[in-house]
Length: 87
Image (tube, rainbow, N blue to C red):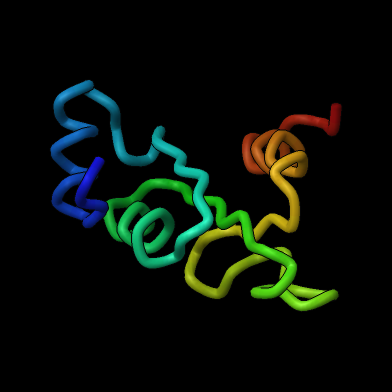
């Protein structure tokens, strides 16, 4: 997608018949990948660099999204969000 704004995400979800509450986005850019998805009602996961987090960054973002230090933590967070036990 060349434009990553709330309206573009709404169109994309509508085109494929996906409800916003069933949609999850994983990205490394808050302004394009995370915040617009939160605005349309989806779930977002921010994969942050060590530089942006520091050595001990937050595990949860303040704006309704979760921050991952490594992509390998995504499955654990998705399972926890769905009430499933850790794999």
